[in-house]
Length: 208
Image (cartoon, rainbow, N blue to C red; front, side, top):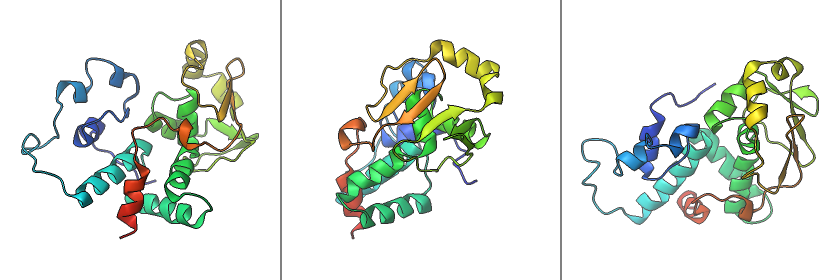
C-alpha cells in the first residue's frame, strides 16, 4: 500500500496552514505551523510571488495531503467526479469524505486520518457486519460501521470509548457512542465539509 512516510509537519508548513495530520499534537504549542509560520527549506522565508498556476497547484496539494491521497489516486477521484452528475468540485470532495479512513476519523474513532488509515488496514472495522481493511473504500448511504469483536476487547478502544464525543460530528453521520457504531445517514453536502478548501481551483487546474 503506497503512502507518504516523510515528516508530516513539513507538509503543513509547506501549505502554511494546519492540516491536522498529527491528531492532538496539532492543538498544542508543539504544532510546527504555530512555531514556524513559513515554508520549510532554505528559501522558505523568501519565496517569490506565486502565479495563478501555483495557487491552483498548492490548493490541489493541500487537499491531497489533508486526505492522505497520492497523486495518481487523486487524479482518479477527479476523473470519477467529472463523470458524475452535479458540480465536479463538490463531487470530488464528497468522494474524498466518503473514504472509509476519513469516515473513521470523522466519527472520532481515530485521532487523525493517518491513524484511522492504519486502524482500517489492521482490520478493526466492519461494514454492515463484513470485515473491510481497505482505507479507500467508499461508504454508501445506510452503511453501518462497527468494531470487530476482537477490537472491542482491546485496551485502545476501551479507553477511546470513555473519551468519545459527538462534538464536531458532521450531520451526514450518526454515532452510537455506547456501542461504538457509526452510520452513514446521507451523502455529505458541501456545507458539511468545513475545511479551508477552494475546490474550484482544483477543477481549473485539471481543466487545462
